[in-house]
Image 1 (cartoon, rainbow over the protein chains, first blue to last red):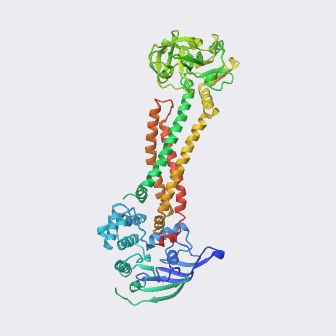
Image 2: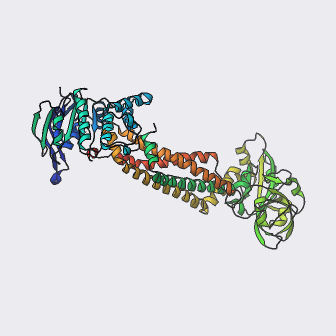
Image 3: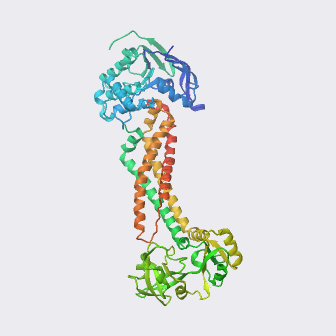
Length: 232
Length: 374
């Protein structure tokens, strides 16, 4: 069973003459233990697709199953629970909370899972340690480099122990070395921890970290490749 | 770990200062205006409320304390004959001219009562003895109005309506709404200081016997006394207060200012909390993506509103209490009892939380895709 199973997915924004079809009959599987790249030019529908896969945007039609559960028909109030249990997001702009320290950013995600107090602090520190960020626990985002911010963001995404990590252009704002570090970490999540990792990108340098590449253009899947194992 | 709400609130100190200024302004304005309203209310009816009487017999249709039309004092004896009446006394409340030692004239309000029964006597005597008012030409005034009346010491002689008067005592904290100071004296002296004739009175104060049925006593008084109204002290107090507060528009004006303060405060708070929400809108989007419910986001915004309200209220009420204290030595009479202070905290909370609703509405309508934009 795929961690995320997408079938006949369409998404149309606005109505009538102004209607714009962002996704048009997309079929896609994201598997546990694999890094799946969603590649395509700007405006191809990648971000819309990842928004729907992450249960924060509703499709116009089609089916999305997360961990085997159909989510498109779920009422709005049940979607936060789906995201909390199954999905961790990593954003291009990091989206860290600037008024919280690195460890507090991770703790906040744990709080949403009802892990609070000393246990929350201990687990947040452990996650940052995994990301080689233990010496920056008490730093505010403004005092971190781009790569460090993204590692905190990954630690935060993992705080809820999700089955799936959805990353949107995670290396776009990073220099080459930081980008590699982040990609190695994301691949490690898939290979060593068995998470399903889907990464939206148009950066061909990250191809070497992928197990599967899905190409999207004009809201349609135009190709899907399974890659041989490579090592960066 | 301090919550995200608190961190965000204190992060932008300028915005916090603007929010708090709005709340403080609102709290002070509402507290002072409400305090003035209560002060006015208390002042307009304090003579009635502190009279110790159960009933006031007045001329027909009297609207407020100061405008009674004199009526025959024979009704006193009729009143005394009514079953259930323990005491009944004549009582005069009348404006008169007070001549200061320097020759200047001031308007005053002569209150003539029976020093033996003490019905309608001054209730906060700071210096002197009420019993001494039985002596001819003696009066008692409030210390606050002594400078206005040109009185510098006990025993000082002045003139009321051309008749000699000697100040033999001071009260403390007995204010008047009409700005004409109250001058307490005996009924006999009051006849000389006013235009009330010897066989007339402006009121009868009636005290029911202990354990008497007040409704029955009132019914008996009403049937026994003709061409007058028999009002309970509470009724006459409410009638007088109602006239001054709402009949003249004075109270409406004061209350309008209080409501205005509330509105201005609410708008300032709503605007600043809204601006703060817009600034952090991406964070709210991120929270939603992380699995936070709308309820969690409501709580963040409401927590900011509540903390702002608590700080703003604390500062505001402290300032209002200072204004209240300073009013004791000024012409304004501001009264802020604990019930009003507590109620104002509730109003401040409500104001801030209502103001936050605009932001909550915005935060829960976030375009989810915004979190993916760099």
